[in-house]
Image 1 (cartoon, rainbow over the protein chains, first blue to last red):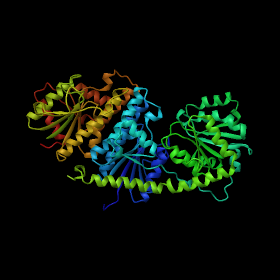
Image 2: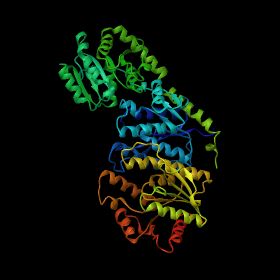
Image 3: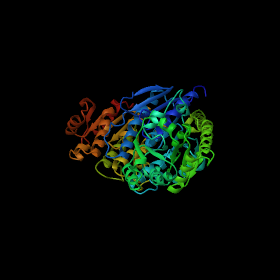
Image 4: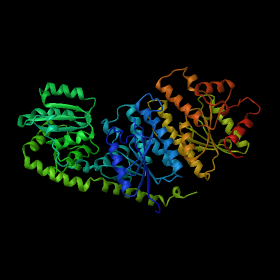
Length: 405
Length: 205
């Protein structure tokens, strides 16, 4: 190729708009692709105070007015937002003389925009499936859920390749949408480990005091307080852990289960050992992760498990449930501890083991740090993604769509 | 002239008055030796393609079968309309002059095709949400109105069937009157006026 490869990323969230894991994923993937000489255009939803167009680390970011159309419900809003996103993206590609080589959509939230752009410009189209409706809801129960499920199926049908961040998700997507296996590619999610590097003379003891007494170990949960994340399993495990060691259980994040979780802690008589911080900004969260004596990821459904990687990058030992993508990240008793999903007894065993055996905890820390830097760094992941684009572009170049008329 | 017509109803699928009208128009265009394609919806009464009376008729269906309302159904169906229109465009060496869109349903597809491929469109207004919903302003009605507004804003020309509708469109959507053509289907000059409107909107004879 004479000129640099160019990709247009579609995503409903991009910093400073952060709703879940897609935002940091697309941000890190895009800027690392740019480092590898790929011209990246990100088209995303607007955010108060963020400019309509800016260049971040070589990445062209365009934000479209996403609340222009009133909508009766979230799904309808998504489709209307896609209409506006598609319109703006189409104008942008047209202004570039069609100079976009591939389109890349992240989740069903931008499915229809991506499908439309693929057909009007006749370019290879990629979809990263970060999650699925059938996984999030543990089944499809309503027309609303089925509509989203079918939209996801349509997206996987239209994509040339479907990228998943774990082997677990590959199997899951193949099962959920009956996708031919050769359409699926595994490229792991990454962690920005430089952000966790130890700062010189960093003293976190004052900071730690805000969350726990000096004699209390910190057990940290980070995630939305929803059923699939399993925060209730951790609350149920608290009494057994306290039988062995003094600890404070800190829950970071919000969700519809928050009141239920407080009630459960009250009933178990451990409310004074449990703290709900709500949503924390990145910097505070990273400090807290560095202070954590153990980080727990008790998910019941987890497409990937980025929060486990972040804890490992922060140097906190991890205890994860054997669910979704988590067992691929953690090698049991080598760089973390695996416990049975949905089982408070198993979870309390794992936490207690890490908190009571310091040599063991240190070994997990060291091995985890090495793994993060080798396997989950964004530089490698961007290169793998670029390879996927190039392989497909090579196939594409032999097909009628590539013929310039 | 090479014209693609978008209509959500077309015989044999008849919902209101639009189906027969669009059929009459397409047939008349073909009789006048203009190139016309119709892109419409089919619910299994018909196949994906046929050529009744010489009108090249493409029918799309919605890949998403389950819906929570007409809006999600229409918005997803637009992608298939857009895909078929893009296929027509590439198959005819990019020689498409104009798209004529009937009512709000397929305005999203027309707008993307305009922005992406520089194909202008005409918005032919049969009815508007303000009248259909008797002034209701729930988010559902407002969504449809926002799409109708987008049509009035992005279209080269608006075609209405009466002076009354011209006034209404101007009142409701502040559409500039000089972009609105009143063409009565009952007028003797009906097809002549339509062809003239197409020509003045960028279609070459």
